[in-house]
Length: 223
Figure 1 (cartoon, helix red, strand yellow):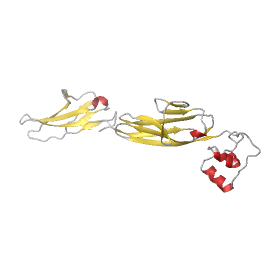
Figure 2 (cartoon, one colour; figure 1 turned 120 degrees about the vertical axis):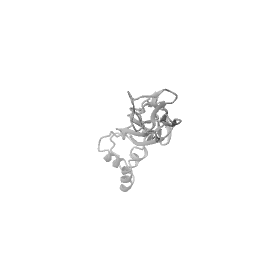
Figure 3 (cartoon, rainbow, N blue to C red; figure 1 turned 90 degrees about the vertical axis):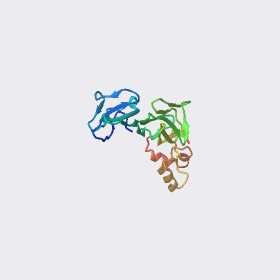
Figure 4 (tube, one colour; figure 1 turned 30 degrees about the vertical axis):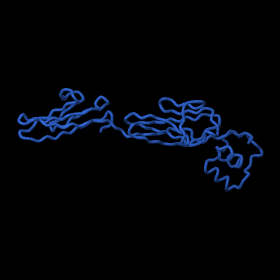
């Protein structure tokens, strides 16, 4: 196995007296000769440079010293590359009515597919959700219901991996003279620390603490 576009070394050790000559064939084709992307070394190793899908095949090494019947062994070359999944997330916290934009980079061989899930439920293009062919997830006109964990699933016929990121949608709120915490300071501190101010019910309970947490960057409306 070799990664795409890397060098593939197919080794063939032969013994005999007189010393046998080595030749290589690809599947049922004629002999492989040194030249271009191919090189056969004196020790019998076949080198294929920049291995690609066209090189996925069976290769036969034949040893012949002209005295006894030639012998051969066959090896199959395959391309493999471990999957990699990475999410670019520049908006861990989004204002209500804004846009969530997440890009998933999925790499590997065989070439993987990229899909999205939110809290374990598959996401598909429709409504305010759009998933592009290159793995970008866009959700427009977001509400607090869009707060949660988003997972990118990268999979091919050999492997499946996933990576996740969290997005918090913060409700718009206007200045309110009556904005105050309606529970203990300790509980409000826990709510702020747990990043729960983006959920509708918590700013109502800890309005003042949540407002201080956002440090005046957000507009508050009547809760």
